[in-house]
Image (tube, rainbow, N blue to C red):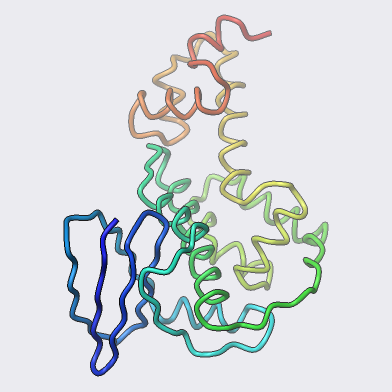
Amino acid sequence: MQRLERRSGQEYSTGMGRRGSITFIPANSSSRWDIYGPMDILQLYLSPELLDRVGRESPGPARPLIESTAQPDNILAGLLELTLQTFGEPAYLEGLYRQQLASLIAIHIVKTHSGVAETTEKASGGLSPTILRMTLERLSSENQEDFSLAALADAANLSRFHFCRSFKKSTGLTPHEWLRQRRMDQAMAMLRDPGLQVTDIAGILGYATLTAFCVAFKRHTGSTPGEWRRTAP
């Protein structure tokens, strides 16, 4: 925990930097910092285009983003810490996860650092049966180009924000969670085939290493692939 002072042009602000405190600086800003001791800082850069798009898609009238220094925001801090985690999953799963995470961070910033009017409007319904079926077919295909959040949302003719919300309303899972669940279901089906080695299954499912596959499988099932295979019905 350290005292911070920040000068931006004629503006001066101060705060107490600690875990869970957030400093938000819009694009094209410059600052001079005085920090009175060592501390760990995570910096994340989001494009103004992403924030503008999220602002247009979010309900309620938007206002310009405003600067803040060392303000408590445990929700955003938790999302930022998630960006540090790596799971060793296939690139298409990691990519979809990080796209969703970036969108969540952008949505939170737009809501809490701009004064977007909150609304009591209930979440919209889920995807229509036709759109849901089409989306699940894309996620079930072997064409990994179809797995990007932009591609899924564009095909559904929805913004990314509304697509993720509607998808979870329909399935109970985010697109990343649904795809990971399907990959684990495939892994369990393959493990029932005694002719397939665990290393072969890891490669088929796109894991870079056997260790990454085993870690992901155990996180999902509580057992290693070998343990699961020995006790599988």
